[in-house]
Length: 299
Image (cartoon, rainbow, N blue to C red; front, side, top):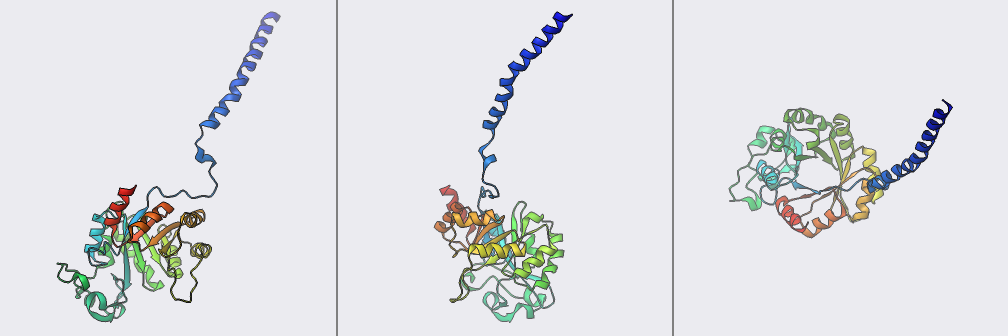
């Protein structure tokens, strides 16, 4: 009986001693098996695997800007998204147009806000400038019509020129569009408009637009100032004019702050390639198809 107990104790002690090296080696092996990203610098946002290309007012190099033809062509050329400008008519409807009047695109020097929807709809907006004689026949689109051009998996960027109070008018067309929140991005130069959009549409993204310099005496904002204002507005990203001194260090500062980094308007292939290498999240361009082809050739 005592002999059996001694044998059992001996076996347990030997098993314990033999298991010690294994107990030590397993955690060491697991440590070296961990991916290196586990030890990456904290709070650093990963750079985008792919820089998105956004059509500026659609594919506006090859079709009249802010028209249904321009949006459809932009997506056909492979744009990840299209940007549009919306304004409010005299009778409170949302239409698509960049300028505050219809002189440049329709030949009538009258503010959009002073025209009813029916009056604006009677204008031709596809035969001005270089588009004369090119076969385009376009009416000023409604926001609903523009939203309907967005394919599955693509995006639409809504540039707000309407007053802050008109942001609420987006509710009905966005709900009726069937687009997912991740397909719609609100952009504006006006901080108050961005704040209002985020208050009304917390599940949608908003980016604050910033120009490099508005007047000759203005000092362009620093990256720290841009980040601070964007954080104050509660937006997800900043969308900067391409004149800013944007390099990899600039983009990394924005990403570390938890913000996305977007750039407008870029038509030069070399500039687009430089921004892609710097890690920006998207560029907006008048020629989405041409830039897409160029960047794909150099990757």
